[in-house]
Image 1 (cartoon, rainbow, N blue to C red):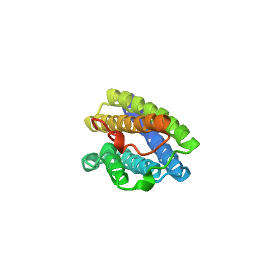
Image 2 (cartoon, rainbow, N blue to C red):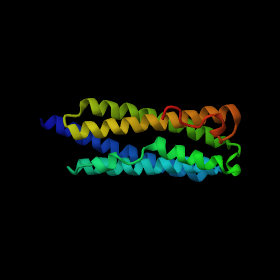
Image 3 (cartoon, rainbow, N blue to C red):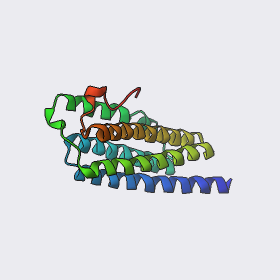
Image 4 (tube, helix red, strand yellow):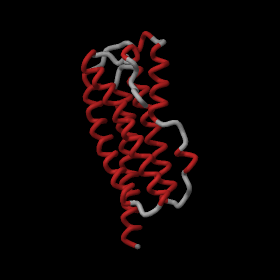
Length: 172
């Protein structure tokens, strides 16, 4: 039993580090992009990572996290950002060279996060831990989908504005 608890403590420690690194990366990406729409998308991911960090920290202290799991996820928030941009012609700006690189790096980071959380959920011996890691895996997958759609659109058009093509989220 001690080995399982130690493994979960290690998984929670790694998860905290991943989320902290994610916050730093997305904050930096938001500062580097010259596009308001891209900046808002990256900042929404900072908020997701903060929420993830708080949930992991709460669980590691033995606290319940149900209320935090029910907050709006990344798909809903980013969809709102793109809906607002639809009305703002200034969002129709071309991407900067670093935007594509940032999106590719973020995709890799989200893929690794998804795999880590999926594996952690399978190894979890506690229902609360399992639920947390499954939720985090789902949100990492949603981040991946949002980022992949943004990257595909940028590479095809050089434009951050996705709404005319049906939006960044398909099937949410």
